[in-house]
Image (cartoon, rainbow, N blue to C red; front, side):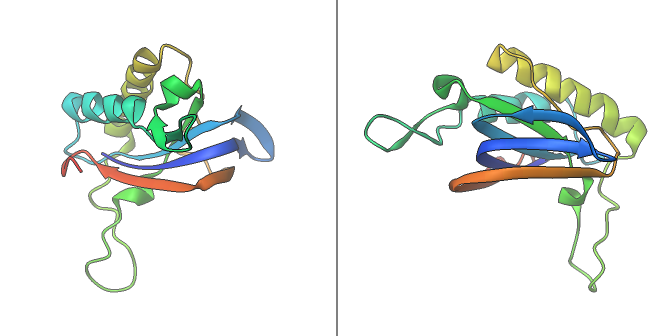
Length: 150
């Protein structure tokens, strides 16, 4: 699994011009699911995201997690995070999991994150053509890959 995490002051998702989800201050998590991903990837990433200290403390140092800061988390499926650009100029998405594999993992990831955060996690619509709006705060943007554990 790969995630691109952005600290935001606000974010929203629309599908066909209709608002689907919105959050205030917190994190937007763009989630790519690979064909080899499973429960251990979900557990590791959800835990890292919940504990990631990228919110300022009273001294202005990034020392608080989204839980500590009382922020929201919005999860949006993003198969293009699994792109391979190794060959040619057209990205290959062959490593992205097929929907019949990805959807249950996506749903399990959201449930695990809800458990770690002890709150509901709004989402986009899996497989839909979504318009994601956000105001990146900082900007703070972090990429993680559960296979590399970095």
